[in-house]
Amino acid sequence: MGAIVDPRKIYTFEQMKVDIDCLCIKYPYLAKEIIGYSVEKRELFAIKLGTGSKNVLLNGAHHAREWLTTALLMNMIEYYCELVQLKADFRKLLQDVSIWFIPMVNPDGGVTLVQTGSNLPFLRTLNNESDDFRAWKANIRGVDLNRQYPVDWESIDDQMKKPAPAMYKGGAQPLSEPEVKALYQFVLEKDFCNAACYHSSGEEIFWKYKITGEFLNQAKGLANDLAELTGYQLVEPDDEPSGGGGLLIGF
Image (tube, rainbow, N blue to C red):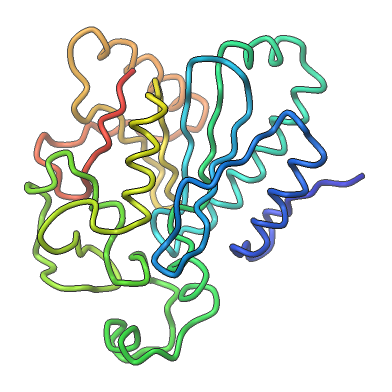
């Protein structure tokens, strides 16, 4: 049997759902969970690999136009499942660690707009009356999900005062969007020890924000390993977040 996930084609929400079901059938040690729903009631899936007590989170497609990260993570799930069958040391690792994948945080923006477009007057107005939504980053309500988390939300640059294709952090408070609220609650429930949020622009690793004390050296070591593996540059975010709030996942 060939590969289930094909990351070389436009990867839609519908294709992801089919692939998740197929992967769970082929690899019964995978588990899926619906952690919430988007504005337009699309499922937010979390896929678990491993049985360990240490939880690691990998997520993608906070930004609609970066749906390529969904294909990357889905391909990663399949690759790791194959390693389970081939590598005894990897099977042993998964007795200590559970890897959770949330491949598509923003299914409405990623599917409805960037990939298929929309005729809704509200969305066309936000998009400068253009039918080309390929640059859209926000969710379907024009809120940038990457700027919606509560840690230092008040300090995030709020030059965008209303819904827009990008940069609008929301109105009166963080966690106003169901996609972000679902992920936030899921993180609190699972108490993750490490997390990586995948984006598809830039070759950089933002790693240090709000990490201090005994965890700093451990975080720097992990960041250095990732930089060596990927060739990406390490970036230390400023103390004042101009780009996005945080979940505050420790190490």
